Image (tube, rainbow, N blue to C red; front, side, top):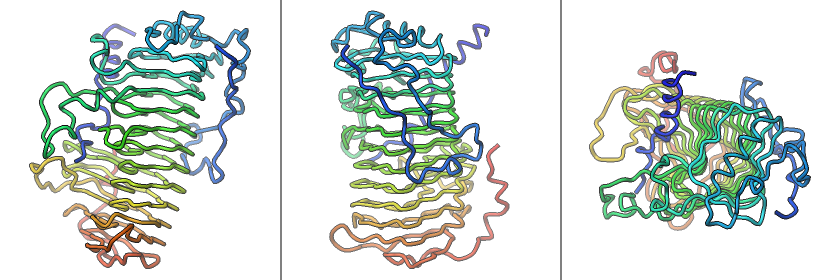
Length: 471
């Protein structure tokens, strides 16, 4: 690889725009052996991806060498490389050296043992590596405490980056701590100023964990908390299995999306609990074959597809299923959000067996997403098609209608189906009826509250669906 090519790749990693962030501001001791990841009771690989080579799979034994056996040639305890683990010493170099050693052997294990707190600075853990690499966090892995202690030479876009890896696992019983509170309180953050106005100045905050251009990944069992910005990002990945995570940050922490998926195929997110200050799970452009099940969200901004189509861009999301999930105390429930002027499509979405608890905007499609009053009306739009809502029940915050379909004037939403949708006021009485604008579909059963604004049939204005396919 020549120098120019290498420089270009590194530039992408350090300067990548994290999922249209601008479109997101809203008003050694003995070790415990970790068991293999369990499949959800209703999990089927066919529901995740149509391409078996990209299907999330459960390894028969993610630890072929027991971390308890410190004599194993495949276990690389970071303390053996000089890590102190007292919460104040900089252990970055030890982790980098342990990574290099584990990367060079098959089924290598980087071990951060329990009862230690390891502080490291922004680092890229890159491949390719030998297959079966495990990064096991049983202690605490901690980021620097705020922008004042962040090394000037380090990227402020992300903290930990896992790049160009295959068959790698990030597991453990420990905690990954982001120390995000001082980042959230920067004067430029949206919650800091009156009427949405904030102070000028540097505002960039790092995402905590980012997987980039990697495949056959397994993330399991960790507690991930207090990220300065997004907690986890998967960008350009193929075959991702996420299970039994506990992700948390305060309700008012800005832009702290739990899990963000973008330009990735074959992603399964299961049996996890997420509470944070932004989207619980956000699905960005280029995502397909995403399966979400057994997730508890809230407080949060719900599960969002988008925002899509910013700056007249093309964006496609396809084949996503969300089922057996709880969303509580959240600003939104199930949301699709696109900008005017975008292109592409959102198609093949299924939302099933969702319980809402005191949620605003339980079901919402917003094709007029905008962050200011200066957005102009535009004719092109991302086509929203083939979206199913089945067995969506619970309670909603009466400040907004529980169902809101605001579709493009020129590119209608089509084939929206509702079945067994029963949403009741959490307290008080419904002030506004469900809202529809240029939305077409059908009700397989009567909804509560009744929705009479959904149009039958197909509009004449949408035209050939192939015109909205992504290249």
